[in-house]
Image 1 (cartoon, rainbow, N blue to C red):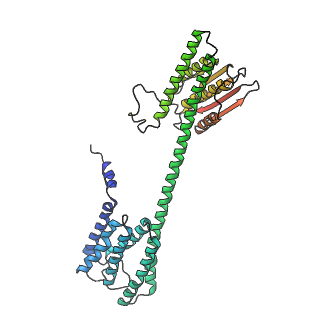
Image 2: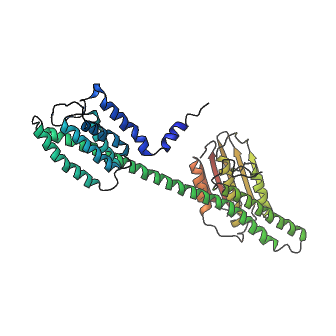
Length: 393
């Protein structure tokens, strides 16, 4: 079956002059039809004359064919059409092609880039002698008729100017939307980088610090160094997934290699996250209730990031304290609660920027959920999040 979409695509690939030419040809043919002769624009009241000489053909051609240039060279188009219109009116042809003048004026007002005011002044000045000649050759129409026609042509120009301003405003709006989208995307990528790098690096720093005191226990030292190595590999894997988002072929099947995983971590990976935190010396009690919904949208990823950031803060600010992680799956939302009892100590880890919790709050707010992070009276802290499921945001 022939795909019909290629027809408009092919049409838009053509030069704008070629696309504007058919209208000019149609206007020329219509002006030559016997039934439409003498039914065009009439200024000055001259009697209609038959179109039976070369000058009449020139008037038809000048008022119609130059319309093909109305967007590419609007000044040239307007000049040719104006000359043709003058020849038409002075000789009394009153051609249908005379409608090309307001079209040329509208196009000039819309597409002319330079000397716009000069062009309008020149045309206005040229109209004065034309009006005088028509008044003398005609039955003496009142001056109000010529003024009315002039104002109608100015209106056509004004409509073109308005179209130009609307087009410029739309282009500015699109640029602003594109800038906002780029800023939002940069912010999202920054949050992803913060979540991935901060958690894994914090775990590696804590594990490495612990290894310094295990030189007398080779088996435990080997286990700790293995945990550091595994954490580094997971960090590289998560970073690779994140950087894949910057690949132009991401999502098309060309940018992913064999064995690549989905971008959104399934909630089942929470157990791996908890186990990694345990190996870094943090006792974590993990509870998962309910059955994950078939379609959670971005909720499972946000839930994962909430647990990840909360465990990172536990390692950094309450290292060694008993930590609880509760993830509850409902039909329409995922509830996350992560807390510590305040019995640990601050780990020797990189300082925080405060971006993590703020980024989590933004993520949850986008999905229409609730987020809170509070300090407890015993020195611990608790992070709570209610994340609506099913949103594709």
